[in-house]
Image (cartoon, rainbow, N blue to C red; front, side):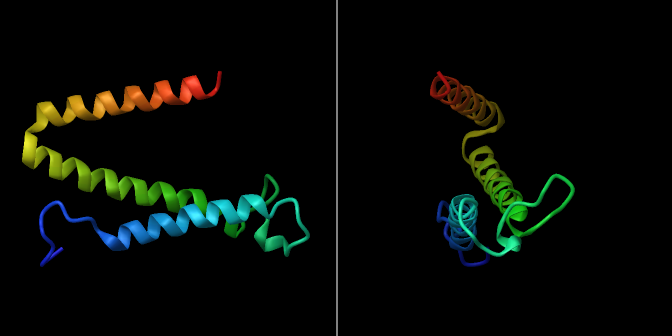
Length: 101
């Protein structure tokens, strides 16, 4: 991150995350069509390209989480950062819970 300004987004991470989201949409919408088998999710005992897409997204989210954590700790301190992330987790849980009703 040599000449990056503080607070500036990491465009390579944004592109990687966008690619992962795009691939999630593509591989999940192709399952109803006649496409090559490598573009469909594997049966229970296999592993194919679509099965790599969700881990790819989770990896990108983990990297973004770490970057966000470090920036917030250096800017606001540990206690305030922990409270921020706990509040975020609670809100995400509530949105997910309400969305399932």
